[in-house]
Amino acid sequence: MATVEELLRRGAEQLRAAGSESARLDAELLLANEIGIDRTAIVAHPTAPVGAGAAARYEAALARRAAGEPVAYIRGIKEFHGLAFAVDDRALIPRPETELLVDLALDDIVGRLTSAPRPTGTRPLSVADVGTGSGAIAVSVAVALRKSGASADVRLFATDVSPDALELARENAVGHGVADVMRFVEADLLPPVIPGPFDLVLANLPYIPTETLPELPVAASFEPGLALDGGLDGLDVVRALLARLPEALAPGGLALLEIGADQSDAALAAIAASLPGWPARVEPDLTGRPRVVRLERPAA
Image (cartoon, rainbow, N blue to C red; front, side):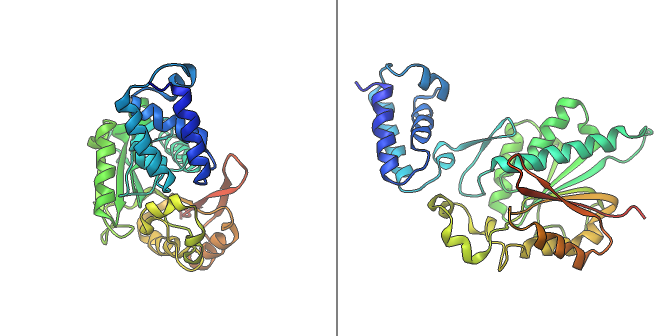
């Protein structure tokens, strides 16, 4: 019976030969998943024997990873903002850099809820997550609000043009116990008739330029192209959303839009052209790279 370390060594060698840049980590995650334990337990017990069934499942998972399939799809799970999300090829895999969007959203919501007394009967804040995909952004916001006791003060809408992605988002909302405080709407960006306007619009839309899609790592080929392809310069879908904001965003409202690290100037130019007079700036991620456009609609 093979030990943990023996399987990890062989698996890492196989994945390294296939081109994985994180071969050892991938092997640890896959073996832990097939045994049904946490990765830390794998690392802590290298001499533990592994049963034949788990070893066979691990070998099958290695073959899938060697063919380029993302570890998240093989495991069926991805950690995001301290939560575990179900993931599959219905939607884009949540990226760590997108956690900034959640943090900025929560800061804005808390600020709006606490900056002044809210008389009884005040309408809840209205928040839209446009192109929700797996629901990672909206569900993370909903979970944080529930923990803080603020769920009743916020209405959360999650939209997506893909019914399959929207179903995955619903599943994640149910799994985290927040489906009751969310509304899911199948729509191209936003519904034809806005149920708002919204106080806060969040969006991690496709922003990869079409011509660079073939240059992405092979793992990206397993993800839906609709969630990646942003058109000629990567900002076509973002521009389409900008065109909807005058009707969708309330006076004094805020839009937070994730962009590529090299799209800061182009995104600000697009805003200046379509929404003159709307203050905008770009927030950097933890690595210091441009990541989220912060766009405000003037209050008056």
